Length: 308
Image (cartoon, rainbow, N blue to C red; front, side, top):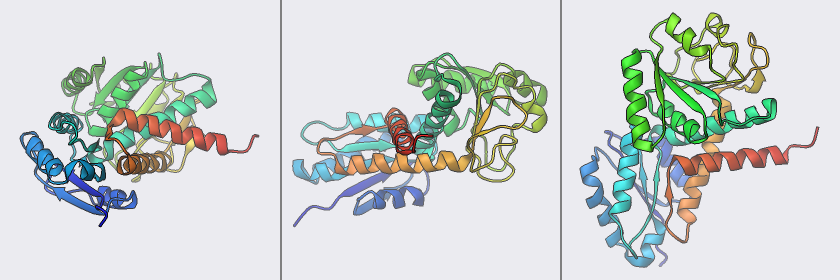
């Protein structure tokens, strides 16, 4: 009898994400078991329980997925699971807390593609402002942008202290330089928008963080991306379906909406889960691998389009 494909889903939360369960099933996993309220201290024991019970042949059909809502904790849990294993008992690992890793990767890949297509440049050296930068998507988007060579500032509606702490903690955890700026009031937000070439809106759903009046202060803006799919739009003028559509009010700027990002996010998570399920040798998948997968998907889409 052939061994089934099993995915163990670890989450610090009280429940696993149905979205992740569906995605894992569609990727080929036949048995998906969630483990809730999993703290960092439980990861080693759970991981070793998963690997020792299947033997060297069974581990090739076994995976561990780390969920939750904390981008930094998920990275620590992934690393702890990796450290708990040794040859030949090594299974594939993936982390994507609240979809933050794949969403941030998709967002940055879309922005990068729009910069290249419309402005002939990449992320390196660009001034990037992340609104809602203390949340999981905002933190990882900031890290990916910084790793790509951008100058990154994260803003928080809670004020400068909260933004600076998130920038320091996140930057230290992932080895990048991030700056914190206040987004607590209109004057602070407009001051932060003024030098921005790229604006990433990662705030809560249904909250408009940049109004039409605010947008007028973003005179250097080239690309604005928004992951809010709930009305009103997070950035005024960026519709959920927009895919590098010219942005009203800022000459030369384009907008990328939540559903355009969401399509790339879906494809990215699916590809990673499939590669994890089908891998002959164990893989470890985090947001850098998600970014690579999102870039690959967009490159394939661009190559498939007929020449103008």
